[in-house]
Length: 241
Image (cartoon, rainbow, N blue to C red; front, side):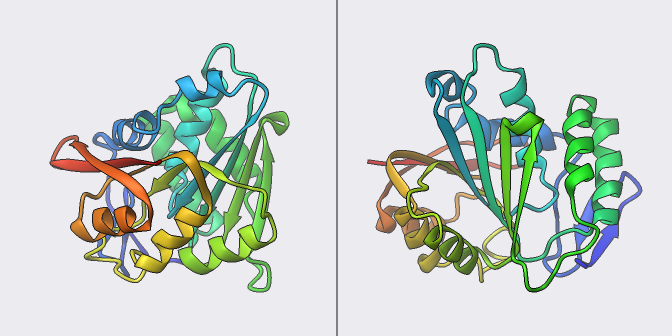
């Protein structure tokens, strides 16, 4: 079980990484701006026709990015595609912890309530250490969540070795900041992300750290900076040309 301290507001604070998972003051808006908008959604859902949209994420955490994406996917008009969302998380929340988080979500962002409840219905009571891959079929099969319980590089490499035809259309690079979680933000991960991407794959991250920007450029992405929200001065977004 991940070690959490809970603020009175209901926000979880990671003891291991000494950082917050989200903020009730603008957390949803940040997800919409950094990950959803920078990757061209929801318009890309409409443009996909009857194909599958594949989103990859490093750092599932509380699942906020997934829930926001699912909500907009289900509420976008004229969408015929399916959503396949693959996320890797080395230190997953227990179901009890996630229930506590989603109580806060539903108070702060009631529009996410249905998505929260459905994910909780399928979320395991405990994680089998021998099974590092859990698949959830949600929204009557319109949404598939592949949750990889592993470090980012290993988890993504092993999962896609079994799904070689599976290429990501858009990446959400989340997780804790490089200064607090340096083990994740390695060049090896950026190279794996590049291998799992195709021409036109987009990518975005809340961090504008030089190690991330330079690493992604070296891996094969054209990266740019955009203004951040709130206290965040800049964020990163890019595309594989």
